[in-house]
Image (cartoon, rainbow, N blue to C red):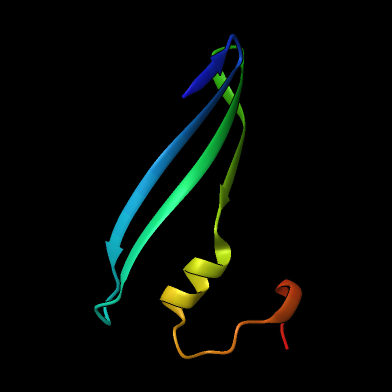
Length: 68
């Protein structure tokens, strides 16, 4: 975790099993900005290709994030 007076960045991990029995282990970087004691903005960064490959295994992954 890295923190400044109104900003925090954290790295978190998630573990899950899909209903098909596939295992997902994912790392996320999450960035928070605060104003007036409330969350102003949240940005989440993760490996979307890994999520697609796990949750939609067997499907063809779109190129450049666009539907084919």
